[in-house]
Image 1: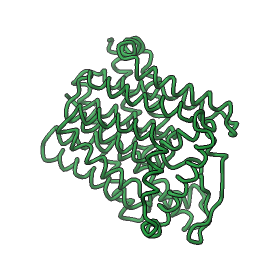
Image 2: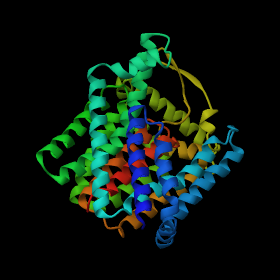
Image 3: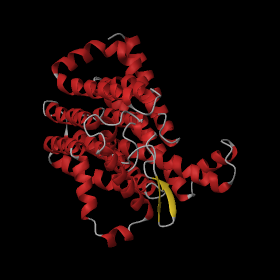
Image 4: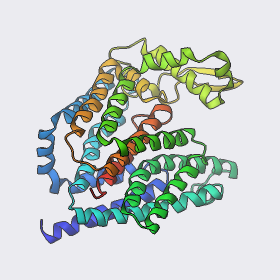
Length: 401
């Protein structure tokens, strides 16, 4: 590769790494753009290698293409008539696959340099989240009040917490690769920085009102420890388990809800009690179209208002707040089998890829954060979450083997 191409790669990747962390601090929504641009702008350099890699491991790519195509086709019978989601899935998914592939192809010395750059950005972002957690979202609240035009300080606080909570969801995905990579490099300063990253993740996950973040952090830490000890088997079992949770979502969720005693349901916090009502309503609608689903983004249209503990709420607010139930509701059993097939195919392919313990732990951490987030909180189709996942996997592949 010529010196100019290496310079082009370095400038593009370093710039987009910085922008990605800025976007995380601003709420994470821009991660779709920054990660997508990594794949798009490096595509001319990696196109031939990407084709060869796809031909050598075609199953995950074919399942992903079939799943995205089926989701797009389901839009034809969806009550939601805008094609936004289908276009985003079809255009961005290939770029999100290309981004970590592009980062994985750097030489070990260039990976080391890029990882140091990335970890420095992660430390700066950690300090930002620590300050916001300690100051009651001061910076973001002031921005919402004076720049975004929030009508009152109470509204500004709500908007700031929403932005920061979403940003922490994306930050947690990058936390694993950055922290584990720094710890593996050794040295007092690096390991102190790794602990600082975890401290920011812990405080951020309990500070901004998104309960799923703390649950994701706990589950991801356990998964990372298992992957450090059993790298390949943990990743493979985890992927197959994720596939099973998608394919059997209505049965699993129905069984869990039916086993909860009434006293426990009454004792749940209101937000979790509402979640259970959302899941019940989603399963009721899945039963009406179990094979093909109601169509992509149908959750935006299907609606029913209920009252719980004196609070009125929508029983299907944009999505089912569970990845498996959303996939079943909108794309049916066909979509569930295809998206589950992607994870099963990945579990087979990952056994033939050379990764280190640190990389395995980082990928496990990132994947569990993502899956927990879409299992109990955010929508499974949200492209910023897909971008954050792809970026974080790319970060894990920058760690020296």
